[in-house]
Length: 569
View 1 (cartoon, rainbow, N blue to C red):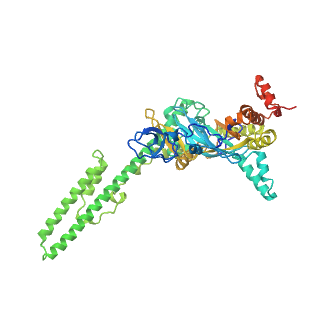
View 2 (cartoon, rainbow, N blue to C red; view 1 turned 135 degrees about the vertical axis):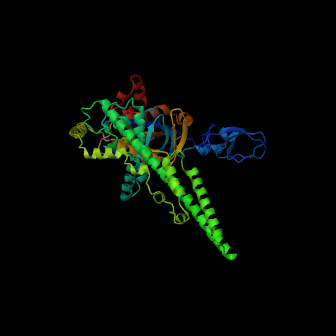
View 3 (tube, helix red, strand yellow; view 1 turned 90 degrees about the horizontal axis):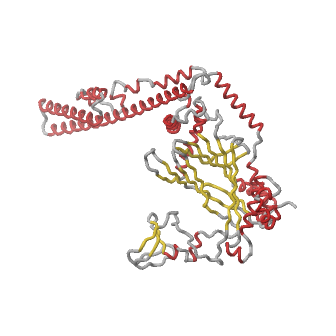
């Protein structure tokens, strides 16, 4: 999926601040309020003595207060829950300075309004004009998805140079190449593609024609997403420049109705085939049972010294009576009383004599009934429409409009200078090296977590339900979204419109100590240091030399006092 980047695009910079929590600066705080699986903890009371804390393994007395997770059968005492246990702080203590820091406090939330839809794409930028989506979702009718973002830092430029200074040239070349790959991971792209404008363009409808056609939009989404119906069977095939908008919408509605009729007939044919197969299977099983009874009866009569013709005739008549009862039972179970074709087929099966039942077929619907099903003989109406559409030549104006659209898009691409956002991480890394005199600003990689949560509704009046999207569900959602984009773009023949691209870059300012130790022991103002890091990122994004043009006038004196190195002399 290639999205033109000369449309609407935005750049978002995120600078987070990370304070260290060392053992030499203990803090009594609630360090964790969830179980290891992420579930919330509820207060509880032990009904008897003998319960133990899953964190400090202390035995609890009767009526002791605890906090429990029933889903994981995980209990902690009040001391561990309130953070009074020093070992409890190790659950969220970050790694010391020099190692990567990971956190998932940031979350990407996407919502869709009722009767609106769009495609959400997430991925990376391979080139200045190429977007590579790795995840995709179709958002519609008040869907909401929450995607946790994993933020992991990499060493600062100065720290990286110090660590590779003792390596050989080959090792340094490999380390620098790997560093470039890490910097490429700090660029996170999110694209949204509106579905209605592309549907109108695909079906040869005027702009905003589907705004008030809610039912038609829902039916089109169902046909494209669930059944992958080709757009040629649904679009208006006439001269769209001369036909009014009402006529074109009516033609699309008729095409949708024809496709729905064809799908209903196909479903009925499948149900009819399953009923016939079940009828034949039960009848064959009954024939085999009666054949075995005949054989066993013949062996029994022969062992008793033979039998006369009257005895055998009476037994054959009894078998015929049982076969008739079997066919009537199958008729009552497998066939509808109001269907005349079913009664006729069942009557034919009931007229089978003893000899014909021995040679009965073994389970196919075509062998049971000599007359094929009416649904299989009739040619669906959309097939004729399809032949008409194939035989009818496409209007020359449609080709001219598509060629002019491609020409205009190529002309815009040639006139508008495309911004190469793939060079942004390297520019930030260079400015971090030259402007960050405190060596505290780290590039941060952004990646989506493995599990997402999606809230959706089956209908307008139904309640919302939330489900977890694991790797398999994400793959299914991605395939569904790509199939829809393939239909909207006619397998890449039409460029997509209504696209918005958001580029997100992140950096983390890391402090060596906790907040109070940074302020008291080191005598450092953390606000001034954080503001200096934000100004460095802003100078890189806006490509300005004087940082005073980026801040408010009343903040210039504070910038000159604490960040004089960012102001040209």
